[in-house]
Amino acid sequence: MPMLIEELDEEPTDRSYTFHHLPDAKFSSFGSPEIQPFFDKWGFGPDMAMCTFRVEQKVTSETFQTMLDAFFKDREVLSVLHSQTGIRVLSPPKVSVRWQPMSTKVVSMSFFNKLEEAGCIGSSGHIRGRLEEDWEDVPIVNLIREAILMEESELYDTFSEQDRREFLFRIFQHLIFGGASNQYEDHVEDYFTATKAVYKDLLSVRRSDTGDVEVLSTIGSIVSLGDAGFLYPKESLLNFCYIIHDPVACSESSSHCMFNSS
Image 1 (cartoon, rainbow, N blue to C red):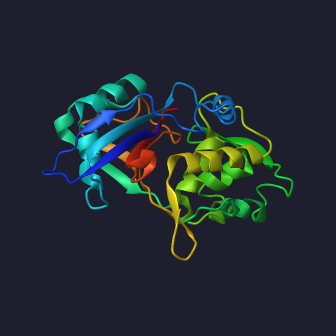
Image 2 (image 1 turned 135 degrees about the vertical axis):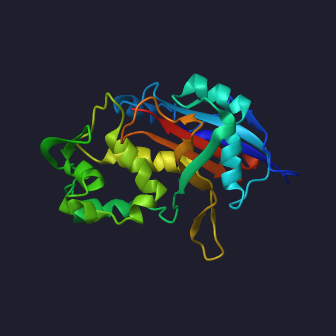
C-alpha cells in the first residue's frame, strides 16, 4: 500500500507530527485502465492498498525516523490502516519503527539489461522457464524469479546487494512475484511497463544542474513496528510496506506508504 502524506512546510515546534488522510487522492498507475488490469491479473487484490496523508510539519532526512514513529502512533492514521490493510497497532505508545532506506540512484529501465545478459530472458523478452520449485513457500517457475530470490543459485549474482536496495528493483521484484493468485507472464515487457509506471507515479524527480535526473523522494522499507503490533496477518517473503516522503507532490511535500500482504 502506498500512503501519500502531503506536507504543509511548517517547521515543527516540537517532536510531534499531525497527519490528515486525503481519501480523494489519485494515483496515475493504480486504478488506471492501462495498468490496473496487470495488478488484477498478478494477484494484487484487496491485500494491497495505497493511502495518502498530509503532514503539517516539515520532514527532513534527520527527522524521518521521528515522523515514522509519529505516523504509526497517530489515531487518524491507525483508523485508516486498520480498515484498509492488515497492519495492526495494538499499543501505540510502544511504536518503534525499524526501517531500511531505499536507494533511488537507478532511474533507467536499462538497469534490467542484466537479465538478458545473464540468460534469464531471451532477446525477444521471453522469460526462460525452469522446473518449478518452492523456495520458502514461493514458487520459482522461471529464471527471473530464481535470480531475484534464490541465494544459492549462480544467477543470484545478476544483481548486487546495492542493486537490490534500489527502489526500481524492488518494484520490479514485487510485480514479478505478484500476490496469492498471480497469473504470471511469459514475456517481460508488461512487467517493465508496469514497473516504469509505478516508479514515475510514486516518486518526484527533477533535472540537476548537470542535466541528470535526480529523485527528490525519500523511501523507507518498513521492517517492523517494535512491540506495538504487527505489519502483516501472516509472514511471507512477498509482503512489503513502504513509506515514501515526497517533498513536492501536489504542489506541497508528500509521503506515500505502499503495503501488500500475501
